[in-house]
Each structure stands twice: as structure tokens, then as C-alpha cells.
Length: 431
Image (cartoon, rainbow, N blue to C red):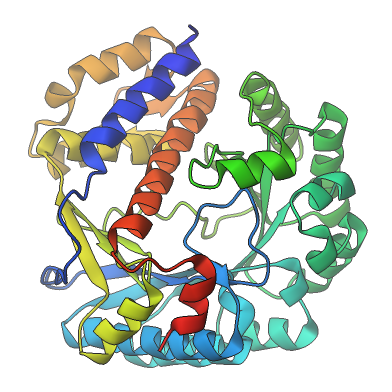
């Protein structure tokens, strides 16, 4: 067994301890906000035109009526937490595909900017929403970062992912991205590596398109994750996930991006310039998640909203947030979570960590920190701990396993909300 597998098993063990939510779902109010603290706000919009077989995020088939009602409920929920005293300075809109109804998304962002001193807004989208009208509307709304889900420019892989028919060929996607260039502070492209039928040549061609042809501001290159709840669908569509080539592919990506002048913001995000990036959990320890299927991390506790879109609408209409689960982390788990997220960004400031945990950070995690240095993943630089080149790949493994644990938790939440809704019914029955 190699060290990558050992690291993966350790993170799975950590996940089992932290990501439980064993209680039955019931309304769980968010804690009181800390005085004077501006939070990051994540908003989840679960509607998609195409339900990709590799994705385990909370998403349902788009229908205009239910999606319109959902966005109205989401706007009301934002008002509810603002009335509780929460203030926000950054907003991330994810999904799903937040841009399925761009005019309503514009109104939602405008409402948030009216109530809060928003400095930055990041929105996820797909290539077919890069038309001039949508781009103009998002730019006028003050979106500073647009993140486009591409995954690959390889037509064969796009067909396997069931994205070719809806989003077009690799050539058509490149044309759409070129049309969005320069419209936002940061244009990010989401890619995936380690598809079962992906070749080294295909991966290198994708990298050349990103850096040499398009010259995009930012690339987030995620490893393909084994989605437990969708494994049957995923395996039939794209094949069985194997991890034997993952390190090789990651090293090709990292070497190419460095050579093209990109800086690594996190172990899998590369940027030409400063700006927002997807892993907001790296530099924003506390965040509020609103919308069906969202998560929050506040005062050392994790919170989950209901995965029933119908229940979510009814709760908001009743003057409540959609939060139905909470899990308080032990101090040890909080330290581990902090270590995982901070080093995902490449470095951990020791003084900040000791202040955060009242002088008990290194002492409380001496075994973990010693082991990481022994295997060559982490280097002690005096005031900071820093990931080595080897450590960056091990952190990809760790974060893959962490997010796989979150995906398993999502699957559990879908089954424990007690509604029996399927993805299709959830979209059709939203009130």
C-alpha cells in the first residue's frame, strides 16, 4: 500500500468522525452572528439543464416555474438572515447552474448589494450561458468572478459526460469562452482530470488550449471523484474511476501551469493574477450557506440545509431558514479541519493558528504535523508550515477524500430528509 492510499484512508477516517449529522432532520436555527464580523455567503441554486453523471452535488432538472419560485425563496431567506444581524462582504453562487434564469439572478445579486457591502461576487455557469445578453447582465450586476464548467475540450470525453449535445463541441466551447474574456475581473475555467478514457495527449492538448490559445485568468483542475450515489450511472457513462494515473496527470498539470506563468492558489487552482478562487474555505474560515442542500460552518459547528426543495420553500415561507442539521466539532476535529483547509492554500501561519486555538494548535496536532514532515509533505519554514511539491499532490488526495465524504453526506441527507423526492419530482413539486 503506497502513501497516497494511506493518506486517503486517514482522511476517510477523519470524515467518519466529523461528517455525521446523525439526528433526525428538524429546523435548526443558525447561531447569532459575531458582532462586527462580515461573513462569506454561499448560495446554492440546484437547477441544471443537464445532470452530468459524474456530479453528486445537489441538483435537479431545470423547469422554469419551480426554479423561479426557488429563487424567490432564496431571496427571502437572504433577508431572513440579514434581519438576524448577519452581514456579508463576499458572495459565491453555486449549484447546479445559477445562471439558468439570468434576469432573476441579476435581481438577487442587486438585492444583496442593496443590503450588504459586497466587495466580490463569484458565479458558476456553463458554456451555453455565455451569450452576450447573459454576460452583460452578470457584468452589470457586479459579478467579479465567472467560473465556467468545461471539464474538457476533448469531444469524445464531452460525449461520454453527456455534455456535447447541450454545450457543444470543444471548438464551440472555446469560442464561447473567448467571447467572455475581459468582461470580469477573473474568468475561471473548471476542468477535471483522470477520466477513465482520458489520455496524456488529450490532457496536454486541454492545457495548451487553456494557457496558449485562450490565456484564461484562472484554472481549477479537479480530480475526478468516485461518486458513491451515482456510481452506476457514472460507470456506465464514462467508465470506472482508477487512481493509478492520478499523480502522473496532476504532475503534468502542475508543471505546465507553472511554466505558463500561473501561480498556485490552492493545490488544484492556478491563477495568472490575484483574485477570488473556488476554495473560499481556505481563507474564510466561517461562512453561511443558504438554499436547499447548502452547508455552513459557524463557531466550530457544521450546519446543513434540507435537501427537499419542497420542504425548503415551505420553511422559508414560514419565516425560517432551511437549516435542519447541525454537528458540533470537537476541538481536535476543529484543529484538523483548520490544518486541512489552510495547507490546501499552500501554507499555514503558525502565529495565526496558535492565536486561533489559544496556544494549543501545534501541541494538539504534533503527531499529524510530525508525520506530514516525515513523509515529505510539509516543510517547517519557521513562522509557517508550507506544502512541498509532493505535499501538493497528497493534499489533492486529501481534499478529494474530504469532498467525497461531503458527497456521501449529501447522499445521506437526501435519504434522511424523509420526503422520498427524486431529482425529477423535487424539481416539479416545488411550491
